[in-house]
Structure formats: structure tokens, C-alpha cells
Length: 165
Image (tube, rainbow, N blue to C red; front, side):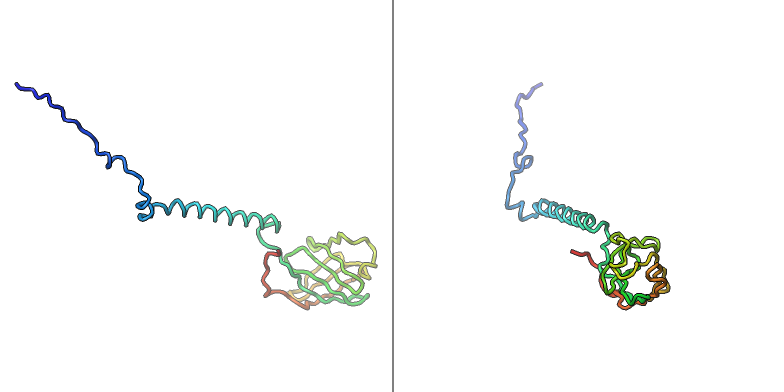
């Protein structure tokens, strides 16, 4: 028996195992796109979420507050006055010939925070309670207004309510 002692060496092909980086192929084949697009999408998402959070903090909630109140014309024994209120909000304002008084309303009861229990600010004592007649009128009940019925003068229904900046 004859035994062959020749050794055949198996050498791997260097080009098939280890591919060299080629910038031209990297650009032409479009392999660079995920490296640009994914960070851009990430930055856009962070900016959008950040602006939503910033506006939510600034507006005390995600829904922007309405910025205009409906104007009602009221009459009392002390003369006519204007009442500003928007259904669904807490802000109210009374404007008479002697001054302006702003406050809030909770469960149909007024809270006049800046009122010092004198009638010189408005010329009469402000109402203590509100009662709704229909969509175009309301009734103010209190010591200085007795039971004043107020009719709507200007309604801001078609106006877009946007974030106030």
C-alpha cells in the first residue's frame, strides 16, 4: 500500500469572508438611509411630545381654555349692567358703570375673591347665585340684584377657541 504524504492546504478566500468597507457601495445601495432616517424620526417624536407636555403645563390641561365669554345685558333696581359668562367655564365678570368685578362660579354659586363686601366697587352688591333660564338668558339672584333676568347680547359660538399665547 502506498501512502500519499502530500498535504493540501485549505485556505479560505479572504474576499468572501472579510469584506472591505466601500463608501461608494454604502451610498449607492442606500445602506446609509436607516442611519439618517431613524434618528430624524426620533428627534421629531421627542419634539412633538415635548411641545404637548409644555402646552399642557402652561394651559393647566390638554384642552386649551376658552378665551372669550358671552356677554349678557342685565337690569336691576340700581341700573343696567353687563354680565360675562360662558357655559362650561368657571370664569365670570360683572361690568357696571362704576367698575368691574371678576370671579368664579361653582355649582351655581359665585365666588367673588376680590370683593370686599362694599357696594362701591360696582354700585350694588353682586349676585350670589346663578340660575339658567334657557340658552339665551339667565337669572342672577342676590341682595343687590334681587332676581335680574339677563339676555344674551353677544355669543361667541362660531369663534375658534385656541391656545392663548
